[in-house]
Image 1 (tube, rainbow, N blue to C red):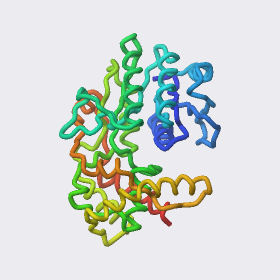
Image 2 (image 1 turned 30 degrees about the vertical axis):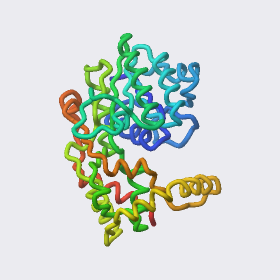
Image 3 (image 1 turned 90 degrees about the horizontal axis):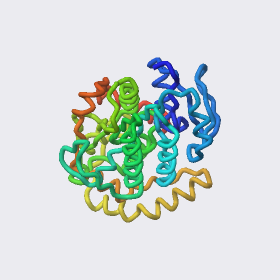
Image 4 (image 1 turned 60 degrees about the vertical axis):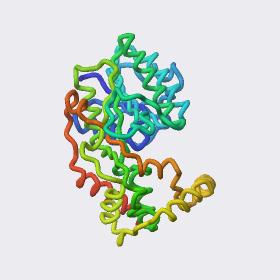
Length: 316
C-alpha cells in the first residue's frame, strides 16, 4: 500500500498505538485528530471532526485506507461511522468493534454467533457494524475486528485500574466470582491484526475475533498482574466483599465524576457489569482470524509483563 492510512481517533489509547505501530511496520500514516498534538517526527496530522461530513471528506483527501479507532459516546460513534461509510468511497475501512456485541453469550463464540449486546456501548457498536456491513454490500471494502479486553501501556480500563484495585486490596483471588474467562487482547496484537487487515486481499464485510487463543480466568489474570506490579500478597476476597463493591459502585462512580472535574483521584468503582464479566464463561474463537489474517501474537506472559511495567510507573 502506497497511499497513506488515516487513523481516526489517533488521540486515544488504541489510536495512538495504532498510529505509531503501523508507522513502525512501514505504513504511511496520517493522524486524524480532533485537536492537534505533538507527534513523532515524520507523521502527518489532520484536524478532523468525524461527525462532520465536510471535515471528514477533507481529511480523506489522498488517503488509501482508514482505520477507525474512534472512542466516544455511543451515539457519536454511530454517527461517525455513518459519516465514514458515506464518505469512504472505495477506500478500505478497518473498523474496531468489540466482543461486547456478543452480550451475555457463553461458551466458544464464533463470529457468526447471534449478536445480543447489553448496554448502550455494545448496542452502539453493533449499530456501527450494521452500517459498515451495508456499506460492504454496496461494494465498499470493510473488515471489522472484535477485540476482547484491550490491555497494555495506556490502557486505563484493563491495566491501570485493575493495578490500582490490586494495590488497594480490592481485587485479587475472587473465588467463584472471578472464575469467568478473561479474553485479553494485547494492544500491539490488535495493531498487528489491523496491519494484516490492511494488507490482505480478503475484504467483504466480515468480522474477526482478536483475542488470546488460550485465555485463562480473571482470577489468573489478577494473580499475574498483581505479582508483576508487586501487589503481594494477593488477597482472597469472598462473595460478601464483592456484594459490598456492588453496593458501593454507584456512589463511587458519582464521586469519580466529581473528582474528575476537580482533578482529584478518587477510589475506583467496580460496576456490576464488570462483576458479571468476571463470571462470564465466554471464549472468543480465533480460527477465522488465524486463517485470513495470520498475524503474530505476543506471548501472554510477555504482554502482561510489558503492561505491568507501564502500570508500575503510573502507581509510583
